[in-house]
Length: 345
Image (cartoon, rainbow, N blue to C red; front, side, top):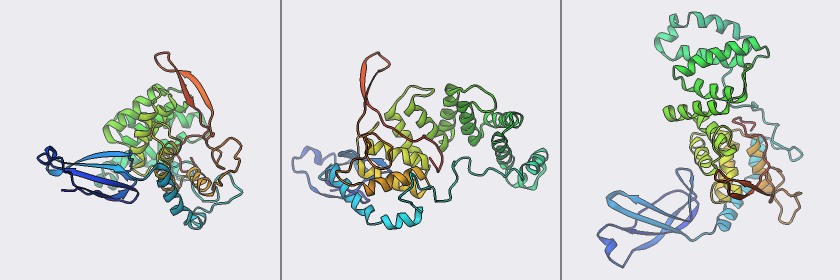
């Protein structure tokens, strides 16, 4: 019997057999329902799914990457006016900065400087609060918000105080603190020297324990850049996908960017555009700029060595470097805006 799959996107032929039927030569086939992604992961040109009752489903693409991209491109070009309105896009701007979104998406609940003194006082009596009696993580959240706010202050004394609070929270296993403590170690906050290796350890632990989306994203960036850990673009893309599935805007942007350029994954411009649009919907300004540049790209126009008007990727710039075994490898370099976890990315 023929199996089934769902979604909208690629066109496939379906071949399905049970274990008994696999010994026969006559295999039933029909056209698969179309879909661009399975669980939001890039779909290769041929896939095999194991269904219930030991059924094997194999789908082979009858739509090329170019055809799929043109179809998805047409779909989104028909909505370009909607995107302009929703994202307050300005054609004369290098990014959609008109939209009122914060420059960094996480942590996204920092208290104001006016509220900070009262919150510091509340910390002293947190365990006596009615909020704590009904919500055991109340004190952890309060301490985390205070620590994050102190780390944003200009004086080193406040930063060190915030770092101490954050470290204690991380050490008792509070997931947000583990992720942010890694960020602070990586950036060298509160007068510390940057320590990317220690940062990676905290992100890895937070990901393993909780699947924390910010930690997954930060670990993906580390593997993408080779900072604090061996560079591994394939693993970076896998981690970007994991965080993107949890609606992390920066991860959705980077997943789309990698798919668009074929970095760490087979190039799939259609899936890339879908992820970039998703990142845009989540508020990522860099993604919005990239989407509009892709949708407005004119065939034959000279973009000065870049792939499109966003100026985020070179058409081609070959570099040579050595891998961990000393072998010379060829790489295609790309120019990117700062990789950040933020909405403004």
